[in-house]
Length: 286
Ligand code: PDD
Image (tube, rainbow, N blue to C red; front, top):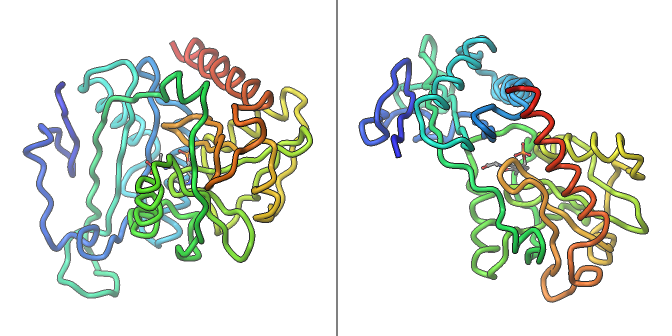
């Protein structure tokens, strides 16, 4: 494994990458990030990830240090310099290094860091058997549409899931479904796929968009609307989606069995559509 990373204009082995302790990412969690899955050395939905990066940067009032074509070239370079056909490219932009003061520093260059790790898509047994999730109160801030590196809320919630031997914590705010600690959430009721709308309470997932597009293109009944906790707890199917999890079925929620206790028919169809779609996109990119 090479583990070549990019930091502020240079490529280097991971162990050589150093950031000053006064970096605002370290001191305040003042930055944003992206995670892009790479299949057969092609970044998946790159344009959409770069658009979301721009929205996140706008959300924290930090100007984009690179153009989209510069990002594209850099991502291509990090993929080329690392091993593995399938990778997960992580990158973050922070507000840079400055004397500690909550207010924004003036004339400071943002810190840009990028790395790649091997992408492992979920094991077949998870796809076929489903996963366990817990429910939790969404106590995060009100700008969850910003992909902020300040992830303490998400970390606490994900840790609660891990301690309950669960894959995810499904979150509710004021009695309504938002998302999960590191995924978006869908449910199926009476054959209709339901998803919470995109707003400030959820991260606009790239996988979420793919799933909604595939559902619409394949004639599956879909509604994006507010979903009550009760509807989730009595759903026929519950799914979690993310760039690294793709689409997984939740088959137990807290102590309760979801639907039949096996990934449902609508999930199986979507999982197949997703795999077919990935193959098509990668063929076109090759
Ligand atoms: N997380 N919601 C949250 C809170 C997330 O952290 C993520 C992804 C998603 C799904 O977004 P996407 O489909 O674009 O991956 C939703 C990434 C993978 C992470 O933090 O590692």
